[in-house]
Image: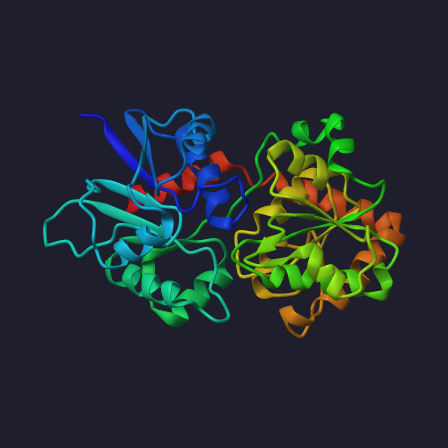
Length: 369
C-alpha cells in the first residue's frame, strides 16, 4: 500500500497572505515536488467555498486528494482543541500550523504528527496558549521558523529534541511574475513608492502603516499597502482620514493574487517589514527574491531571518518602530549605492532558500522521528 503524508492546512478560505495560509500552500507544493518515491501527499482543510476549493485544487496540483472538513476554521480549531473528530487522521500527519488533530496515543499505537508554530505572540491568545500546550503533550515534532522562535517556544514548554528549525522562502517563479508590466497601471502604482503589508489577524499592522505615513522623513513618499484594508467596522481609509493623512499618501491595493503581489513588491523602492509575530517572514523573503531593499526594526527573529541582507534599525518596541523604519527607508531612497547593495544582498540571500529544499528538510524530519 502506498504511504501517505496528510498535510493539514489552516485558514485557506481566501487569497490573503496570512502566514499560516501562505506558508501552508507553499509548503504543500514543495512537499509534493520533493516527495520520496512511493509516498503520496494529501491535503486537508477547513470548510471553504466551492470557488475557493477550485482555486486550491489548481494551486495544489499534485495532491492525491483535497479534503474539506465540515467545519469552518474557527469551529474546527475549537473542536480539535478538545479531540473532537471522527476523521481518519492515522499515519503521518504534518500540520502547517497549530491546527492539528492531536490526541493521546496508546503505547504501541502507530501514527506520527508534526505541528508548526509561526511565532510566539507578545500577548498569546487563549487559542495559542491551549494549542501549544496540547502540542507539547501530544505532538511528535514541532517546526519553528527560526532559532529565536524555538527558544521562545521552549521558554513556555520544553520540547527537547522534538523541535526543528526549518525556515520559509519565496516562490521560485516570483521574478518572472514581477515582470508583468501590464498590471502596473490597473494597480495604480506610482513611479516611486514604499510598500508595506497588513494582516487580517494583526490590526496593529494597520496602525504601523499609519504611523509610518505620518513620519516627516516620508511625507513625500506614497505607501502602497498589500493586505486587508478593513477590520470589522474600521477601514484603513477611514483611519487615514482620522489621522489627517493626505489623500494619495496611502494606496491600498488589498488582497491581491501572486502576479499583482510580485509586480507591486518588485517595483517598490523599499519594503517596510513590521514585526507582527509571524516569524516565517514570507513577505521579507519575497522582497529579497525580487531585489527590493528591506527595512525593519531590529529583533532577534527578524535579524536572524535577514542574516545581514536588510537594513535593520533600532527600535525600543514594535509600537515605536515607525520612526526608525521611516528614517531607514529615507536613507535607502536618498542613497542609490545603499539601495543597490541591499538589493544585491537580498537577491543573494534568496538563493539559499527554496521550497523544494525546505520540503526535503520536512521529509527528513519525519523520517527521523
